[in-house]
Image (cartoon, rainbow, N blue to C red; front, side):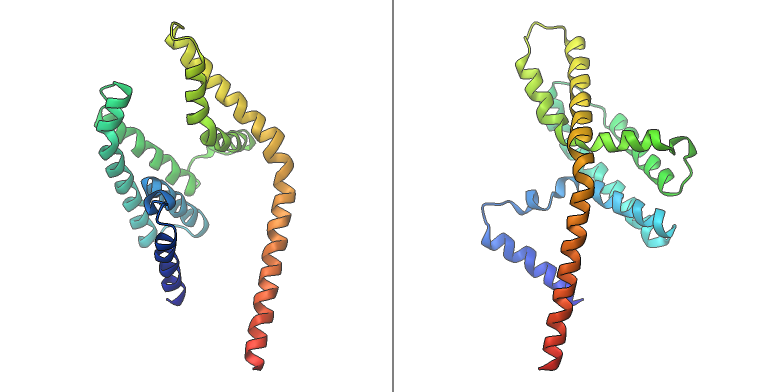
Amino acid sequence: MQGRSGMLHLIIDSAEIFPFIKLKTFLVTDYAGFFIAGAACFLIRAHGLSRSRVVLLCASWALSLYHEFQLLPSFSEHFRLDLSPVVIGIVMTSFFVVLLGLALRRTPILHGSRWAWFGAVSYPLYLIHQNVGYMLFNLTDATANSDVLFWSVIAAAIAFALMVHVAVEKPLARPLRSGIVLGLDALHNWALTAQRSRMRQ
């Protein structure tokens, strides 16, 4: 309880000290439903189903749907497309079903090193796809064929994500992991030493 109170005070103090940072942006609340769903699926995979985890996953699904439906008019106006709420709901629900199936280990077809490799490449693709995609669109000739441009940008983004994974992520993964472990060990030892010092006083 004390830890939760401390975290709440930290959030409030951060908002007061850094008023130029929008708390909504800082906490990434727009995509909170997806992060909550990922955490819930991790708990389900590690510890199995429970009432609280099912409720958490369902709540994250409802929150994600609500948020996307709120953004639908602006997306439709920005992309000049008539986006269907039904299609959006079906696609998002299918993602949640696949995630739950993976968490329950009910998708043997998705097991194996091949899919793990795709998952590893997907994260750098997630980080670069929007901004890099817009940059490539802006650099190309407006008279270019839209279909060719679309698939060329997708191929270029995937190739760049693959390069980031092979040339940056894989070489740095082990030393970064070792550094984090050493840092956490040092922090743990410091906390133990400080606690013992307080107990002696």
